[in-house]
Image (tube, rainbow over all chains, first blue to last red; front, side):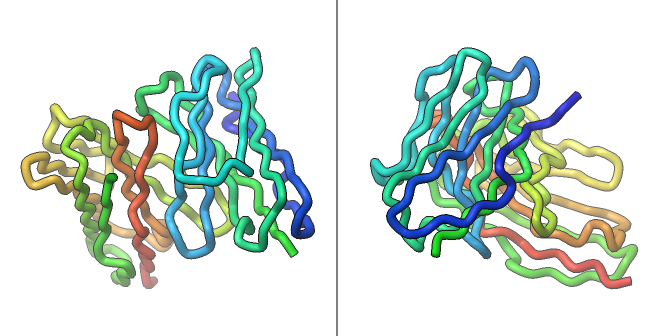
Length: 113
Length: 112
């Protein structure tokens, strides 16, 4: 079975641009969460979606948005990119919205120049 | 909000020795406590987890112990091997906000 897949794996953008990151959860999983991991730190929660509804939102500005599609895949959008948005963006998949067990993809490395 | 502390931040052990990493959390409503291993350039990998109704769980060389009263849980790795070298994160699940709160990470080096 395929695990969580994220695309692209690497991305370079210029300040002010927008970016769309994609995630496909494990087959049968209905929950997708997004995390931002800055170099040297632990991942920080951005969003959780379950059954296409937003269930949780972290402390990130409105430039960050996400959605979940009927096939449970998800997109994370970031507008007006800042240098500080450079990070590894991780997608996690789980069968429920209640936590156990979450499996992470390999991440998308975003560099803003 | 939830505060999660992890100790130590770095740990070097000789191959074959044991390693212990401790995680302290503040949200008494947390009921699910996983540990993740992250290798360079990869996403976090779930290696073991424990729920609040259990005090200890073991899976081969890896074990997790939970003290819910004291609000801490620990990762124990026995007979360490070079491939255990990685960054380890604890990440208690915060029920009210549907999120994992990751600790600051522990860089484990197993010296051959």
